[in-house]
Length: 82
Image (tube, rainbow, N blue to C red):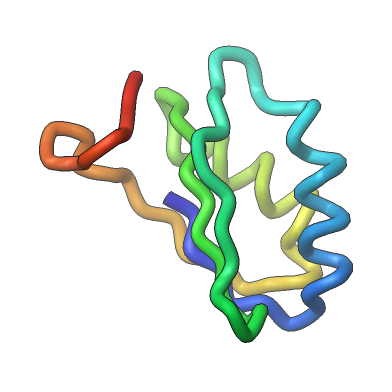
């Protein structure tokens, strides 16, 4: 899970649109959603490595947000397919 506090909304989403087609091998982007006020976002990217997701995500959106990365508990998630 990539949970972002967005500092530049336009730059953030423009960067993620570019990033979407360039996912690391074996990764699947399952969710990208923003809060109604545009200051926060949650992205779910399924991959074997949180570090690889962090590097990938920060390369694109790092300058437009501060992001926290967490491994999801897939066993207790609803709708998170592998």
